[in-house]
Length: 85
Image (cartoon, rainbow, N blue to C red; front, side, top):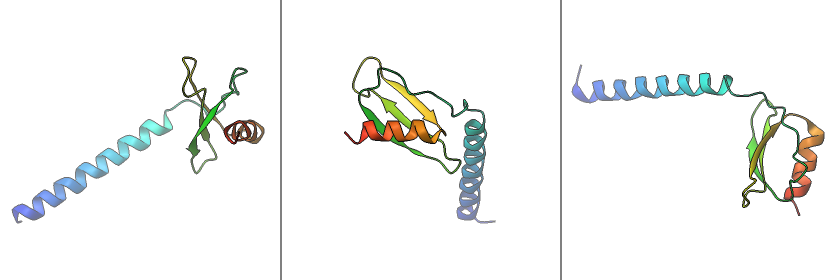
């Protein structure tokens, strides 16, 4: 096997191992059921994954910044409404 082919195979193997580790870390993360904090006056949307878990940052510029992740549609709507202001 050529040196170049060996390097490519090594890189592919490393990428597969990294992807497997990332998936395992994601599946061990906390449940996606955070409530909206009462003092949440400004929101930045982080995104939503394929399972419907959407994450936001409440008060992103303040000292009481908090990441909120939820699958609850009512909570997501409230957070998106604040983000749109």
